[in-house]
Image (cartoon, rainbow, N blue to C red; front, side, top):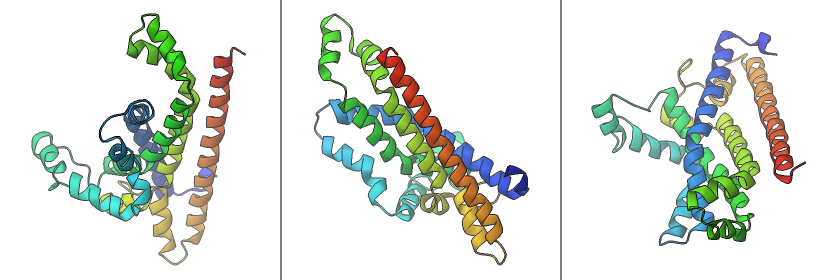
Amino acid sequence: MLAALTPEELTALGLSLKVSLWATLASLPLGLLAAYALARWRFPGHGLLNGLVHLPLILPPVVTGYLLLLAFGRQGWIGAPLWDWFGVTFAFRWTGAALAAAVMAFPLMVRAIRLAIEAVDPKLEQAAATLGAARPVVFLTVTLPLILPGIIAGAVLAFAKAMGEFGATITFVANIPGQTQTLPTAIYSFLQVPGGEAAAWRLVLISVAVALLALALSEWLSRRVAARIAGR
């Protein structure tokens, strides 16, 4: 199937994989922290944090992309200092596409990990703490191994969401072939020109294949981790 793709289509596929991978890996530590905070801590602003985490699921993706442009554009309140001090910009770059994809996928990742943490009996963590283990040690030796299937599921959900992200991406970084054009934006471009349906269909099939492969890998990894935890 890959041999039938044109160089432009292969570039879009490669960029989508890179954007999705970086979006997932970069957001995973913050997603784990947010999930743990929502599942285990009670503090003023808990509801606000929960709302902010899930806000990208509620807002139209175009609105999220526009907010990212206002914040991370070269004149934005975050983007301007990044550009002036470090020469770093996200707008209209592949890194911006990764940022947009990470923001849109973040709620799904946090939700999956949070459910896994809430399924862990807090008494197991308390027992480890009473034996003298510090909180980071308890998390690394007790909590983390038990929630690994949830982390894997959250990461795969985020990767799949990032692969399919369109609205926030095209608003924030546009649709520049070879620079910011991912699979969804490439499909959109092909559908706008006469005779582009064949190329669009090829990319649709590739998208479906990548999504199914990611889900199969997630299932396999989750089963391996669960079996290891159970001692089988």
